[in-house]
Every structure is written in C-alpha cells, then in structure tokens.
Length: 133
Picture 1 (cartoon, rainbow, N blue to C red):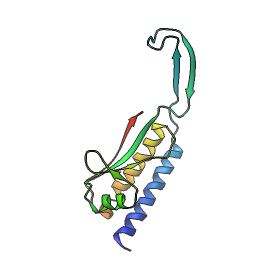
Picture 2: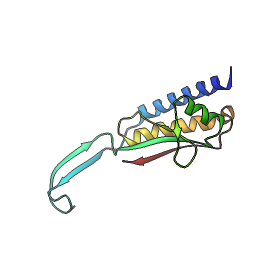
Picture 3: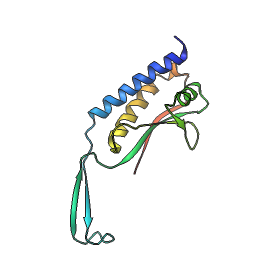
Picture 4: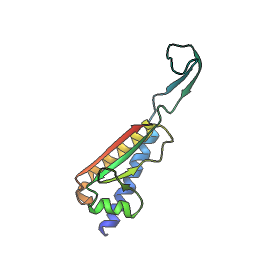
C-alpha cells in the first residue's frame, strides 16, 4: 500500500467519523423575531420563526503546513483548498446551514485525522474551525 493509499483510507474513515458525529448532533433551535421597527428591539414583535437547525454558519478542518505531503494530496484530490493564512482547509458541506452540525462533523474529522498524524506524515496542525453566518 502506498502512502497515498493510506491517506485515502484514513481520509475516508475521517469522513465517516464526521458523518456519524453530524447524525448524532441535535442543534439548539434558534428563534428569529421580526419587530415592528427593524431598528428598535423594544418595538412589538410582529412575527417569529423557530429554526430547528440552530444558527447558520460554516465549519472546516485546517491542516498545516500547506506544503506537507498530506496537505498537497488533499488539494490535488480536491478535498481541500488553500487557506487564506497558509495551510489548507477541508470545508464541511454536509449539515445544511446548521453551524452546530457542521462543527460536530469538523471536530470529529479533525480529531480522527489528528489521531492518525503518524500515518499522514506528521502535519504540524490539524484542527476544526467555524464561524457564524
């Protein structure tokens, strides 16, 4: 088995770990309120919605340095793209708009990859990140 076969096997297992975490995640629902005066939170509420997926957002797994063998392999195989401040990012597209679901996926994936660093050529950093939309 080549190192690239090993990378693929570990990556596939990390994806499965992410999918499992996403399926087990129950986001905290969000309530959105529309006020009579959009610029005054003290004005009467005229409408409200419950968003069962919670807040909207993004999540990804960061791998660096970007010139590590594993990071280059991720980019070459379209699993990741170059990150703004160096390294590469694996974006989580699963989970709809729910930031909590995406975070669960990203954290599980990052944990799995980090636990297998020795087989991935010891990239220095592997961690999950997110931001609200």
